[in-house]
Length: 601
Image: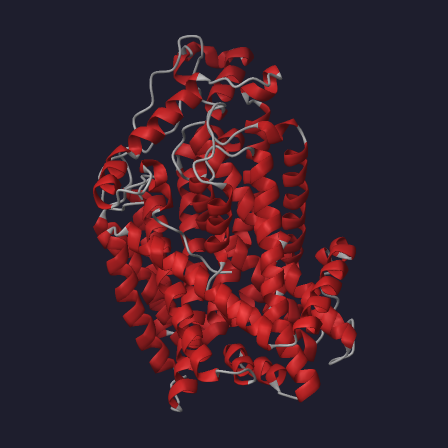
């Protein structure tokens, strides 16, 4: 998507005469329960789409003020800030950690119900709309949405750490049972639960924007629950919370990326480049790159960069599979996948029983779930962009199933190879990973052929993920803070680029990776209940869909979906013209793929 076009979506057409709104009711109707009920109904389910308005400053400046206050506190009083944040995280995880497991599990159940019932026939767009992208290209973009720095950082570190310290003490360290459990709990952290969060956001935003024509924010989706408050302080507070959660999720990725780059450079040069100072310099340099990229609006460059990262990641995966214990890995994948499926509900609800268990959950499962929640709105916006015209059934089954399988294969190949090296060659990768997760990936490459070449490839892969993740994040933050406008101003994107880099640098300086993890968990704690409210609102909207109310199966259009379709097409007209000039073989409606959101996970 080109980022420098000034156009905004078309304003909504006037409400049809036969549909009332709260403004249409007489003032003296407040004493009559019937009109009051109609007013509340009109507030909760307006007949006209909610498009970006003229007031856009409140959300921006409140979010910026809160972020700056945090940076000042963390920069000048790092010890006190770290202590307070640690105490807050301890309270959150001991009193509400259950919600980080239970709510994603409930989302999985809800999504499957929607896919397997008549709700699955509803399209994300008018009834006669069809997918804009071929299925293969759509799946490739789904994978690109979350394959990022974390796949490198934790691809080896998490499974091999679980081998050394088995989850919940269920197996003896270093045993074959520990190997299977290591992957089972890794699949839990990176599989269906994560994608249920993303799918819920993507489905809600896609239905709200493509089917109903609303602006691309979270607050309008909650209107069935909070009514007119979606336009007031409550709605703005929710949008501010989305910004903060998304920002802290991104800064964690940037901190991990800086640590991985410095670790790889140390391996290649033989110098000690893993200090905080070097990592801060890396963050500063990459911040300049992704901020300039976001402000330039060079969508084609980001698209090709994202496709290149996918090719490099696939090549590295195949290399490790071919040069590692291939047959052992295939057997391990099938056995671990069967164990994960067979004990799915059990491990999904396996909560800590003592203090040591709580610490383990804070370092792994709680942190991972909080990370996905912080990325929910970000990835959801991207999934909604590329899924227009898909049915709910297609969306749910593919988004939940395909990435979960492929991520499981990734962790089996890289993590399984490292566990094999530790068990058969006493490579010590697990012990090193428990001390510093950033050493694990390169420690595995040391055990394989062409170590120098693969280390360079890994560093390049992290840098590319780094730039594309932060570039797209800058764009999404600017969209959210400009009242859902798809074409935010360049100064606004520049501001968010600088703030993203500054936040990552300050938190890394204040407490390293632990501070970044704490920030993610604290920002995600209240947001998990926003996701729950989002799911409830989505069901309320779907039950009022004309396709459900009438039970019709033929392709029809409603006045509101027609307006959404017209606004969608008009919003991309200028971009399509631009692409036609710059890339004659690119389809004009491919504009929405031009910002390929490369997040972490």
